[in-house]
Length: 357
Image 1 (cartoon, rainbow, N blue to C red):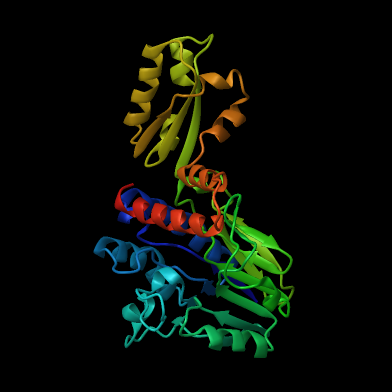
Image 2 (cartoon, rainbow, N blue to C red; image 1 turned 30 degrees about the vertical axis):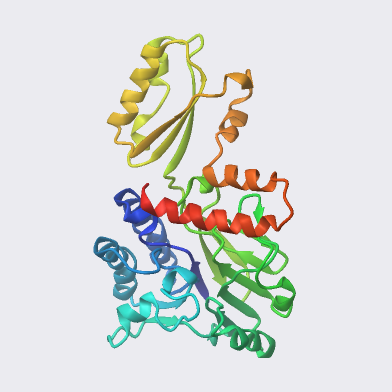
């Protein structure tokens, strides 16, 4: 039996921006469900954070969530299981009130199931332990479930020490990885950066949401209950792009025609200026980008000191906000726990990102 694993879909991310909702829809309409149809996969497990906002949901976002994701699941009679994540709950200390419960409790949709407490399930002869977001209310229950289960596979929305929350930023609080040594395989949502170490896999979000996701592996996974293997299915769509501008030795026509502008519709772009000798050509190029219906264009024009660095190095210099904040905190010289300050800065950044795209 093969099962699709997907996690951290975050419907409503970036202040319910229409550009992100369209981007998310393109993934499900053109990649996710066509793959399930072609390979006759009829079971999907979501590892938490189906929505983004903890306190409320925008009506347009709810419409997109239903029409793009939940209704196609219902129409195909897919056996859908969702483990509750921390973004699916309005309160920090309980999972009992959650997004899917409020959407489906009391309705006659038997193929959509959701879990806010630890539970064991069996698929294709493979026993699995589901671990929803762990908080004060279910902490002891969750640890007991881990210690007592006979399941070989654990799926959850977990915060495990030693894994990357973002590229280059490791989490040093939460659960010890040692308590999961009993499992053959552990798959988790929560951290959007795809990574694995030993038997523990963070599956990563299916698409880019922040600039820190730029050019990272995004997609979903297929799990084989017999071989216990995970197959990664990449999402080819990107919403963030970086362009290096260098007009040295080029005519205006060459500069303007160097770029395929149609691919940038409804995307966010950073133009990194390496060499600008012809302001007129530069403005023409920007004008074509705007006419291609880019959502937002930012210009990084402070790289003259780099002096002929290769393009890839220049692109890497144009770091995202979260990476800059993390490096700043890590370089601070103070007596205290840098990791706690990094967590605070990450939370503040995520909240600020919801105010304006």
